[in-house]
Amino acid sequence: MWYKFDLKDIANLVRKSGVLLALIALVVFLSITSNVFFTTHNILNILRQVSVNLILSIGTAIVILTGGIDVSIGAIMAFSAVVAASLMNSLGILTASILGIFIGLGIGTMNGLAVGVLGLEPFVVTLSTMLSIRGLAYVYTKGYPVSDIPGNYAFLGSGYVGFMPLPILLSISIFILALIILKYTPFGRHIYAIGDNETAARLSGINVKMTKTLVYTINGGLAAFAGLILVSRLISAVPTVGMNAPFDAIAAVVMGGISLSGGKGSLWGMLIGVLLLGTISNGLNLLRIQSFWQEVVRGIVIFIAILIDRLRVSKRL
Figure 1: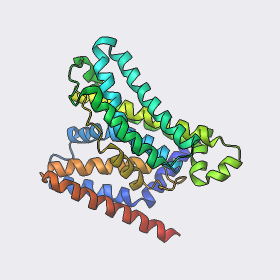
Figure 2: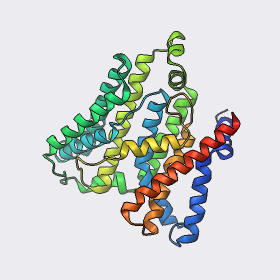
Figure 3: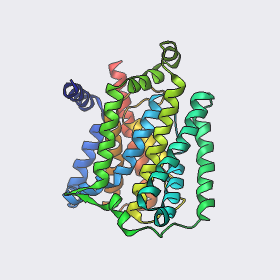
């Protein structure tokens, strides 16, 4: 049953997704214009680079599927990372990392309670969280990077299992777990139901407040974990990390066909969105495009991809 269901999802994505067509076209173009792009080293480099955004996008996707939004994940990344990094020598790598993840879960829970229980607007709640938690990261570090990190911690962000970088394996594992939860558990069905029609979901007996709280809690935990991977890769934790993280994650989710109004879309489309953004960044670097033009090109490509996807959707209506 799982096998048939997944094949159907992938087939629908191939048939309907303008974002996938954009990704394929970009890969072909870069393969022609750069002899470095379509090499094993560069492909693994792209996948390693997008692994953090994939983890962030998974959390963002489940929040958006409920009809919510969370712009605080970059700040959660930063604060969790600097606290964990600063304590690794005194508490040990494992204990400090677990503490960092619990910080993310705690902040996510506060967001969830404010949105789910108090009924406040998700954007306003998470915007205030973003500002306050980012400020705490600066206060905690006094604006300086945390660099006194054990060298063996680099394995989490830069290590390999066989020929495959560990961050890729971790992000793929989380992606598969999220797929299973969304498709085959009551919790996953409740997420879609709330995003589709919150009132109907509540009347059908779904605990909307609890579900929303759990969704934001999970998102906070994933943001903290992504921050730990990034710290491991850089062997440094800075309070400015993740400034653009929520916008990259939201862009990948929306490009992948998940509706901002909630209740519609799949993680497969989100995955294509993440890969497209990563390929754009990699391609612009390989083509030596000046940095201040890169954001312009990224924005245009994202707009075209979304436009193609929406045009294809409108033809089916």
